[in-house]
Image 1 (cartoon, rainbow, N blue to C red):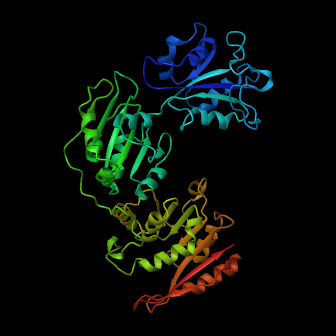
Image 2 (image 1 turned 180 degrees about the vertical axis):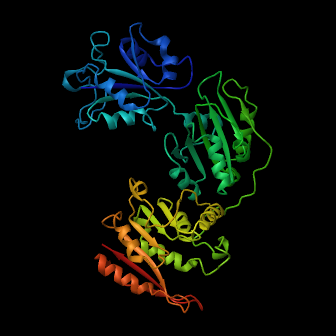
Length: 481
């Protein structure tokens, strides 16, 4: 059986470990970790220690792990499917504090990982890759905990987002949901500057940002309080992490105890033994988004196609359309013929868990939807320009298969569009379209819909008919397999 002992460390070049961990290191033979970790712990390793660098691709690292000698169970860590009614360390006749008899014998692989190895850390990777392995973890504070400690800031109410090797969606969702305090794990692409730039681009300007660099390293550690505008122009040393906190929450600090300002001032006057704190007196840009999410975006807030007010799905119709799409229970929405992007943007704001892909044949609509995404704080919508029937959707649907599709325009090719949608739609997916009857509308979309559903074997739900003021009647159509 493979056995892993995972030890959390900080960026301190002279790490301290409790006696139990030091004994494990002295008894160990095979070690692993990142190159930075190797530099930190090298003085503590036995002279004959073997080291496996953790580098990408991880598959090669795991091959080296599998080539290590198998070890008997030690009773000192958790194994999947074991009977937890017995105290760990007591099963199989072993003593609670038993150690291998000989140096390295049965010890398994000792892995060094940053912070808490179970907090978006390497222990989670080991559990996925080696589900039957025995794992014991010795954690230390993770980087966001250390940053909160330096700021003397509670973190029980902090939402955590990892951008380390991950795309933007979870961060975007946290912003859209107006999360007041977010802790962010960064990487070389999702830097503090890139985070600040994204927030400014989409109007989330009512946050203060705190950046921690080389936390735990007494010589290099730096904690900086900044405006978003400043952070967007700065370069920060790796490794780093970020906490953002809404200014509204900061203004409510007196309700939580009149110590917020005193704590920040005390932090600024710190003797800098552990951190170098800087701040800027320049004010943040005015808030361009409301502090609460609107339910239903006003039509006048959208940039239009050639100023044509008729070329937008009206707000009450949008909300009924989202209801017909059953978006609270959906995961991926395709918006075909987005024009201004009003349906995609409304869906993004009301249901930020959604992954949304928007398609439009008119190239001039690309700038319009991006402008409207910025106006309404709706990042993360995938935009595709071109004839939907000719666009290759294989890559788009590889990992994000649609279970909700809205057809906002079809150019008389409705059956062809729906046939292509069915190549990707999940078995429980739905398709929704709005049909209008008006003197200038030459195509009978409702008839085309009925024909397409009949020929493609789709089942229709009862339609919803609605008329707003003196506008032409709208019929909301819905079908499924």
